[in-house]
Length: 319
Image 1 (cartoon, rainbow, N blue to C red):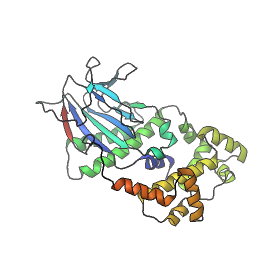
Image 2 (cartoon, rainbow, N blue to C red):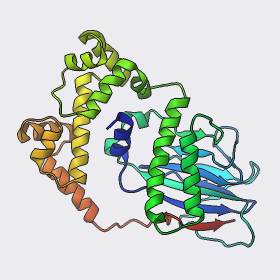
Image 3 (cartoon, rainbow, N blue to C red):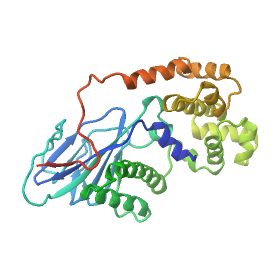
Image 4 (cartoon, one colour):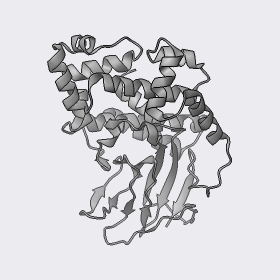
């Protein structure tokens, strides 16, 4: 897998969820922050305004995409002068007659805070991608497909919408990286030498990598490569290799029934004992206990109040 695909695989937990909201002016809605999730808003029809807490209102049009990388709260309204009301936790429908003035898609991606990749942490809290961006036809096509599925649900919509939301997330990240100056970890990904080494580690984490062999992949001598990698990634090459191996192992422990010996082999450890020792240093618990704790958490009944009714194709009318 390439690095960006791996970032998505590591940070996601569960399936993405969404709901379709239709609005009748005047309307204003404040969406609460959602810790442990990334949010997305897509303007499917009409226009509205983003109302930041400490900045000027931002006009939004059909096809515009907002991405909240860290689940920040935000507010939307039909007009900057319309005060947003607090979000109804149940997002109850309030039917009205006639055509809505605007339709939006509200989506959320559940994240695993224990395995958040540095690339996501380096993103700004709120990303606005206008529909007129000429260099993102794939993003525009994905928005159109989502709009069509939500407007006219048909057999297969419940399977298509989560898949399209995954595509939307990838195209949001790709478009942002393609259209904005690199900063933080993204600079490492764009650097020809360091980027080649990162791709090699992610493509084959089980390989017996050394600083010298990664430097050869990068086309640099050992010392200059180590300095460059550390400066851009934020940790030395072998430290990042270990972090990625352990992150991959944790994902396999939680999402597969593979035996510990097989997982150890997949992340580059020749013995289960050596793998268990490295895993305990990283997570403070043995791999088997880590897996059992995850299974117990999934099996336990939730005592929390259910959140908003996010389901593929749901149609909610708000005024």
